[in-house]
Each structure stands twice: as C-alpha cells, then as structure tokens.
Image (tube, rainbow, N blue to C red):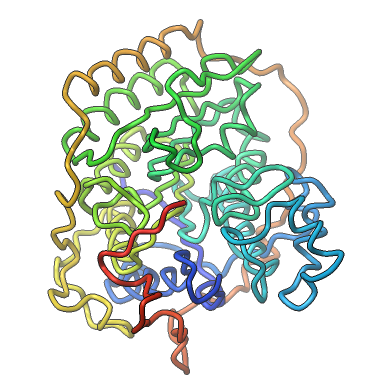
Length: 428
C-alpha cells in the first residue's frame, strides 16, 4: 500500500479551554495527544497546520442562526436573568456548561474539520486528522452530551460538494445521534455507529432498527452493544460490517469518528477495548484506500486518550513507534509504567455472548443488502469552496511547545470530588 498524504491540524489554544473543575470533558487531553505525536516524531511524516477558525456563517450551514448567535454572545458572566431562558432552550447547563471562550473553542475544532474536508475535496491529501473534532451529539438547535457545534455534520456538508456518497463511521462508546439525525432522510450519507445501548445509557438512541426514513431508509445503520465487549468481539463485528457497507454503498469518502471512551477503563465507559484493538478499526478503515477525515470524540481518562490517538496517528502515517512513552512535557501523566499499551482491558464482565453478536452481525448485514444499489446523484454545478488554500500557505506549523505550564488546577484533585481517580464513574 502506497504511503498516504496525511495532513494534521492542531491549534495550541485548543487544550487551554476548561469545561469546569468537576466536568469529565477535558480539552487538555488534546495537548497531551499533540505532545506524544510530536515526541514520537510523527509530525515528520505529515503536513502540520494550524487550522482555519470557523465563523458564525460556517456553523450556520447546519445549525440554526439563533443558536449560534447565542453561543457567540453567551459568557459565564451573562448567563443569569433573561439568558437563563435561552440557555434552557438551547440545552446549555450542567452537561454542556457555559465556559470562558466557548465560541472560540467551537470555532477551533469546527474550523479544523472544515479545512480537512476542503483539503480532501481538492485532492491535496488522502487523510486529514483533527483529534479536536468529532463532537457528534450536537443538534441543529441545541447542545448535547458535551458537544456544542457538530463539526462532523459541517464537514460532511462540505464533502458532499464533491462526493456523491459519504460514509460516516463512529466507534465512540456513545451513539452518534447528532450525525444520524442530520442525515436521517438522505441517501447521500450513510451513518454507521458501534456503541453501547440499553440501561438508559446516554443518549438512549441507536437501536438496531433505527434505519432512516424516506430517501434515507436503510442508510442509517446501528450496532448496539452490551457492557464489556473486547477486542476480538468488536473486530468480528466491525470488519465484516464495514466490508459489506463499502461493497454495497460504494462511498467515495469516509469520515471516521474515533471516540476513545470505548477503551477499557474509561471513566464514562463500560467496554474492554485495548489501544491496539481500537486502532485496528482505524487500520481497517484505511485499507479501503478512500479519502478519509479522521476525528476525535469522547474519551475521559485523558492519559489513555492521548495514548490511543497518538498510536492511531502512527497507523495513519505507517510509522512503527516504540511501546515506551518518549520523554515529553507531560511524562508524569503516563506513570508508573510509561507504556503506550497499558493493560486496560477486562475490568468489566463481557455481556456480549457469541449468539448476541452473531445476531447483530446477521441483522445489520441483511439490512445493508436491502440497498438496491449505490445511489447516484444528478449532475449539477459544484458550489464554490468556502476557503482558498493558497491564501493559507503562510501558516506556521505549531510546535506543540509552551513557554508556560498550560495545565489547569482542575486537572489534579485531592478531595472527594476527584473525577480523575481511576475508579471514578460518572453517569451521563
């Protein structure tokens, strides 16, 4: 397989935002990931860019204007009074708090996904990587599940200018409900989500028989899993289902959401995937030799998130890396073993029997076979690209270094509210 042209997006500001001292979502994980990527010298195998920042109008390509206007104006200082009613309307509150720089945060991660889509469309790369993206729960008019702007939907809308069929694949432990909802009535995008389902697990959607409606009938596929699935069981589902989907749907582009909360020992998760098992899905998706936008997503044990996404970056650039974590600015996070592949499996009993997994695989593949063929698109004028890449060539590569320690006080806890403890479990 020929080496892929990989572009990688990173804005050094993205890890400095903070959802709040007791919130499980920590953008600081992106700083940890980037430090590993650079200290493994993976940046030498990619083109590294500080990404475009999405504007109000970019976000309104999917979201309602009043919702984005609210995100643009709301601050922790003005949420009282009349703003409270708006916050309730837009589902901003405990899970999706208002924090300093909220709109800037959305602008950074959405802009990177959008620029990745443009570069794929223009054929200047084969794979675009944005670990800050993948916030798949955000809806047209509201925040949801730690997600405010759905960068995935915004990027897919850009991809659809050039690609008649886009395949969206989601390996986050939570169902990719926001993306499914956005494309539930169309055959232009097929959504395929592997996730925990049942027992009121967030977001409560993703049943195997949510298949899409009208023109989108059979173009939404869901693989609902039970607690404790391991590498072998996951791969035995992922590979044949992916193969069947690509064979029947014949996408010309793949968007892969790599939420790392499906790893074992995740604070909000209940699966037993290892870092190599999670990465096997990325490696398999790559074998189809299609343009691919690779995004982050969930992941709440941040040292394992960084390990996972650094490892998957190495897979995307075909570079073998050491199992020993290299010296980096945040080495203490990876103590005591300093290994890229710690033992994070088998903490939770596997409730996915062979019979259950065989039933899921058979049902999903039969649903794929209901497709009458790859849908076509009538020839039409391609809308203009939203950005000119030539005008952005003077961007400097981020080096991942900071003059000051950018870690937050909220990353370390000592008391009873310590959500960084290994045995912490937060229900969402």
